[in-house]
Length: 65
Image 1 (cartoon, rainbow, N blue to C red):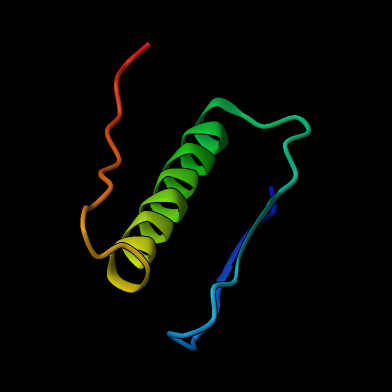
Image 2 (cartoon, helix red, strand yellow):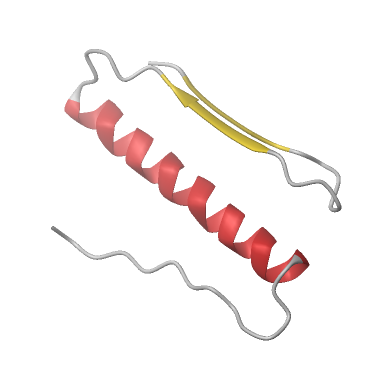
């Protein structure tokens, strides 16, 4: 399994990438990808709240399906 998450180190530049090869993932690997994807989204939301949004804030909320 290959999972790669990169964020720009510059606060004034929005850059993030998420790459994953999803072929033949085991159950445990799938959970790892879900956790990394959730962290990726949360960091994007936090960045948007800190840099772009002044009058309101976004929250990431998860629910079991």
